[in-house]
Image 1 (cartoon, rainbow, N blue to C red):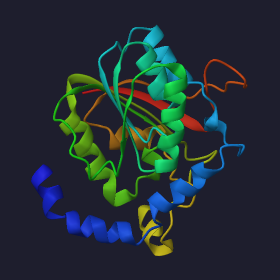
Image 2 (image 1 turned 180 degrees about the horizontal axis):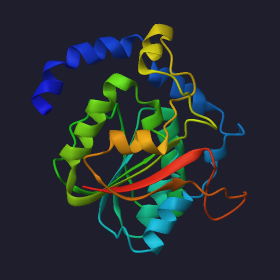
Image 3 (image 1 turned 120 degrees about the horizontal axis):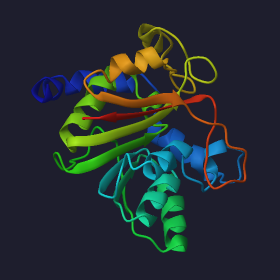
Length: 231
């Protein structure tokens, strides 16, 4: 699978170029920190907190994909996890580093495209994705799965929150993304579709995120699906 992806990387790059410049978009997105964006809060995801409280995941090495301002990375670091947190946006990471400094914890923030980074092989106990996958275009799903398989330890966990296919996410055939050259606000996924995409992993839990009224110690909105899987 890795050799196939490497061979076809120029094709994936070409398809990437049909869509918006993600780096420019996300830098603009994070420039105004006062926007009424639900996940601009500092609280960690309620599902992630629940996994820790139930003992499903325990301190180890974590890779967070699309960490934004760092709220989940900081939560895990405070619990003793060793955290590598990746984001495409320098603006988002500047904000994350400020928050980390205020909290007095260490997080290794990495700026870059998750499909272009040289990440360690089979070294992570947990890969966490809060809102990155639904911005991954259809042709990059194979790259995403390859990243999970390359970076997770055997027995490691993968946890995700992503748009559902009803309340927030765009529910269209994959071909329409390229016809319109847009994923708009992000793609939506049903539980069945998530199970299909991540079928090579063992499902531990897949549910709607709980709605959490802010201000609160955790974050949750009902238009996100939350899943925990094991390699």
